Image (cartoon, rainbow, N blue to C red; front, side, top):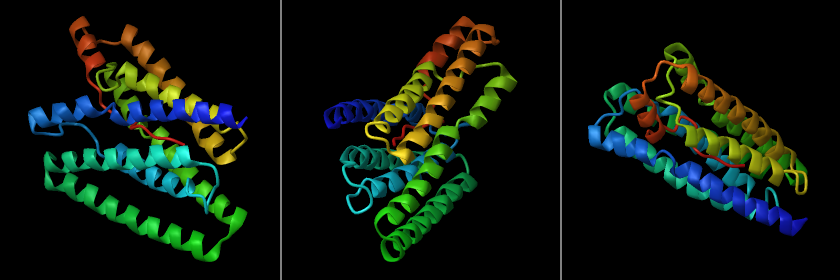
Amino acid sequence: MGLARNIVGIIGNVISFGLFLSPVPTFYRIYKKKAVEEFQAIPYLVTVMNCILWCFYGLPFVKKDNFLVLTINAIGLVIELTYLTIYVIYANDRKKRLTVAYVLLGEVASTVVIVLVAMLALHGSHRTLFVGVMSDIFNIFMYASPLAIWKKVITTKSVEYMPFWLSLAGFSNGVCWTIYGLLPPDIFILISNGLGAIFGFAQLALYGYYYFNGKDSKKEKRQAAEVQLSNQPGGMA
């Protein structure tokens, strides 16, 4: 069981790492155009908080034997903060920059509160339960963050802002970590990633429908395959 869990966890780390890196072409596009255009910062902000909480959950005094959870989320945190730095530099207006700053400050304050409550007021299984529930909440938010883009796809009948490979990676990430959460059962990893797999499948179905039935021209479809807009930035556990 332990060997199988480690193998699945390593595969999950690889998939999650690829998912974290999937927005690189998007931010290269932002760099070239010197503008963030219609790209949104909220998915990256949600993923930052998600990574912070899963790093905390992966520490041995919260949940033992979760080193793979800790490592991939620590890497993801650095990557997501890098994206947000680029976003702020090329944000079109002051309001977008202030939104990023205020949300990050709120996340720092929330993290401090969560850590203090967990470490000072809770012990053993109660600490694991508290941190696990908080981590699940933000993991579900992260998986649900593309909902705004789903609306855009439906209203415009275009998949330009929903690249296939990113959608596939998100689905694969949810499936892999769901399996990891079964070996042995970890209810917190299992619930949020099980829902993530469902969200990912729905996103693939939406992409497939509008790719073949939408209004994109062949040229636009080729561009859509190349554009890696991460409105579901990678995440784990």
